[in-house]
Length: 175
Ligand code: IMP
Ligand code: MG
Image (cartoon, rainbow, N blue to C red):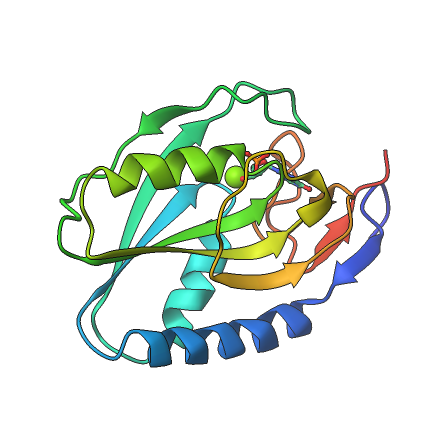
């Protein structure tokens, strides 16, 4: 591919293989009952679609939230706001937040606190990517696809100014 996103960091094949592994762990950790996957728009839409299909049980609920972080295009500012809330009650249910990437941790620590107040039976986080070097808000994450260095990545749902979400690999943006 020409342009700013030439370097593949994680290939689509590596992503798919890792998703199968994560799905096996999740299957083992939740032996019964529905799993409520709460996915954060827009970046996690492809990951949640693939992760949900890798789970073999019928009872997987897919729910969406949208959050804005009032940052510029490459960083989030620390001010988090829910722009689209859940339309289901998660009280008493096993909830798995599904995110594309944890960077500062600000978004997920906010979201986790918010959903905890609704008294789910359990609340865990699955993220495809983790940039541990960038963390400023500590947050415990149970399922991590890949830890990556501090580089801005796009593809597989992740965008830069709304572009590149459709790419099937994760690529480093070099601008
Ligand atoms: P945090 O609140 O700093 O953890 O930010 C998480 C959000 O920032 C993610 O859901 C992404 O929308 C965005 N983000 C952080 N790093 C990247 C990146 O490398 N590429 C694309 N989006 C990113
Ligand atoms: Mg996002």
